[in-house]
Length: 226
Image (cartoon, rainbow, N blue to C red; front, side, top):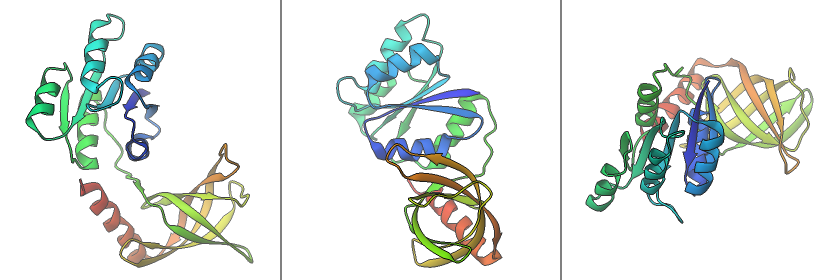
């Protein structure tokens, strides 16, 4: 299993990156600062680091320099994310990173670089972030929850209600742009969160062809968007 370390102070960067890369062939670690990233890398010996150039305390370029100076940790691929201006590009070019990724970039661009640098073939069952209100129905009971991400084959929801793997339910929600989606699904996995809420991976078992097409179109547009 390949190990990837995401380094950034932005919660959105973590959510996007982890959502995109957190799959069975990768183990994803998160570090809000460069110092924390160095600690994780020394312990885990990750295969790839994706870091932002502009971070508090220590920038991504300085992090890359420090890692390249340590004989036991230098053998790691490094993607440095920076703005498209001469100052940041100059810093990135001198950092020792393998790839300089200019903002804004699409999810597909990041995946293409990850695939090439780790010499892996990434299964293209894409998931994208989606925060939407979901109406769920189980037997004769209706409840509301919030989606976390979406793929053509299912979704991750957050709910107060207790469900069990194997439970059957119906889901109803709207995509951005007002496309109304309905689907029957099954709870495939469950994760209890520290705040008392529950995350459930829902696998769609029955969905109309036009609704699946709406989801696939939404995912493709989201991945292409910088």
